[in-house]
Image 1 (cartoon, rainbow, N blue to C red):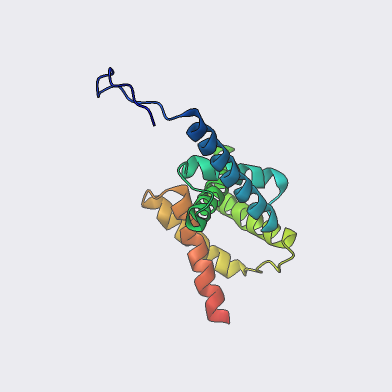
Image 2 (image 1 turned 135 degrees about the horizontal axis):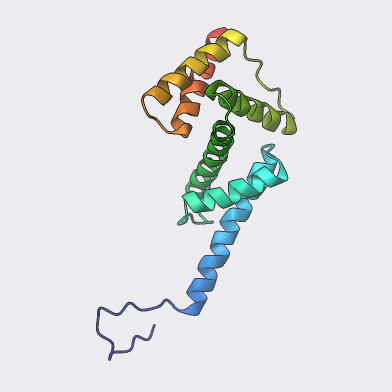
Length: 162
């Protein structure tokens, strides 16, 4: 790469155009991978598109050639979209319980679109999970952490039943 010698070292050099195009193509490729994976996992077309956008926003340096990067971006995109459903319910005046039930319903819809049997949580299990969500909220944890606290309880209770 040719660097002009008459510029002071403090002037940043712009990468060559081919590198910018390659980086843009790679980012689109990661987003395409995220969207395709989300659709395959049972997310609707619209939800899959958002997972792609949110995954890239959360992990902008993800490389299309790195499975770990794509996995991390996918997980981040799913979490961001799920938290958006939760936060939207709260913003529309719904209770935290209704917001959590919205996320549980989202999980069921995604699983059914993927032709998987959705979990059938008992009322008692949902109440215990919600108690964990409420406790996480009282601790000032993020929406993602509140949701994760609730689903951790649901997973533990489901494991006890098996």
